[in-house]
Length: 196
Image (cartoon, rainbow, N blue to C red; front, side, top):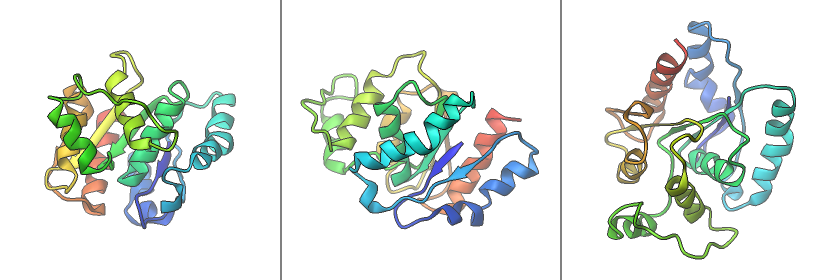
């Protein structure tokens, strides 16, 4: 499982928050890769190309099942990867993903929901519209997408839009905000619901 951090966070933060320890404590056969990313990678298609060439394609060539996870801005990048290369991941685990600016999510709400919303012409660098188009057009038999977020998260209105497109067992909402304590609890819930 490849994990992408949020803005101003680093790979080390996953270790500090106990993500690897939670896997070890459950004795799960699950390898974790924590990737350092920077704000400069948003809108940078080169970052997706490097993720693909350095991590995803070698893992696929070796026959390894691969999930991608992202927290906050890392969730946006993980969704953008899935939208760009839909057949290369076995699943997505998104914890409090950043799903675009409020103008875009308000546009979706004003269209009376995602089913009626039309993304329009997409610029190559418009990852926010690209991910919502991907969410809108995901088939019922698509690879799993798990969403977890805190009920008090500042982005929870956008999370609810995404949650409405997913089966109930693919969504976990707990008390908490946009912080590591909440994300750690969501991660443990994900591990318990998917692997134990």
